[in-house]
Length: 517
Figure: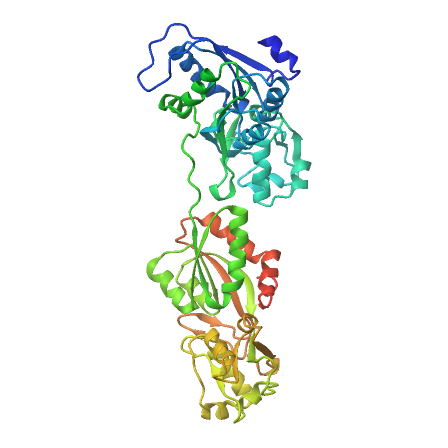
């Protein structure tokens, strides 16, 4: 077989490995296992799974007396060999994507059979002297990386992992000092000190235990590779080839894989994270969560209610990973020690909601005191806006006049805005984002900053919420201490507070978060 491999011109010793697995004697296979056959088969096997496949082939030969000859290279090179020669019986690439390509080229017979999974991991020098704790660290200036060639399965998977986590591709390219053709060569480069780190399969974590170690990638940041075996359409021994493919799914083969650190059961996907969202923030968070799910693969379950009710649920049940509330509730959450991390994402501004076209010609707060204007104001017992409105009316000199009016007092700003929309009242004071969500039916009239609360003079301190600055009502995303998936929760927080997140908040009518928060 050496001459046959040389004819393919692989050049590199590691990529040109061939093996002929022959095992004499052996006992008859137990009922339900491999069928007695004869002859030989040729298997194209990805280098990353070489060790267990050789052992499995030996067991297969012992039970069937079928000789197994093999060539080891990266998945893309093996596919090229198959396409060129149209020979061989079984193809075992390192990722299902290569199996799909073989199918498209009509090189396979039947469907690929998955039998194990490759889990990408960071491979760093022993003791991790460069302090690599996360994927993002790989883009740090000055790091030396061994990143596999794209023709290898690990090369393709690492590109997906980098894209999923939005890593700086240019920085990664600058740090790459070698692009080996196989995953084992990546591990070798780290072992020899030619690179500080690389991406390998976790099953190769013991490749060089004295020189290197694994840094695992959290499930929500990772992309798992499915390793499948394909019977080839050009097989001269299709029955024997299919028998070997079937043998890979037997418990005996799985035991060999497990003993060598390979994953035979599909890794569980990261579970959904629960996101508690105050009603005003719902439209923006729905869009942010959608992007988060697309980029991380982690699902979100969103629970909507008013901020006070959500805080009570979190405190009582301890359930949830993230909550998105506006002032003053984040302060209370902090005091109760429920918060892991705090991200300031936006602010809310009070406006006057009026019907489209402003038929009552309301120009400012003082017009709300007119006899011909019916008003809805949120109840101060449940609403932050309700507290601020009292200050506004006093500063505008209409507190007494408003106290004499018959005012509709719903619990939430959305209800007040809807009262304007259906014509129950002429105007309401609500958050700017509330009006924006109903922009097809409502307009907003700004409130003169002169009558808005002053940051110092009108600040209040309460036992429940601590100091409250009513001049700037902030929206915060908080990851919770009780989270079952804190990494995913923080990733959502980072997205919501990023420039992309800010653009989404602005899109839904929110004001920008204060600088430096």
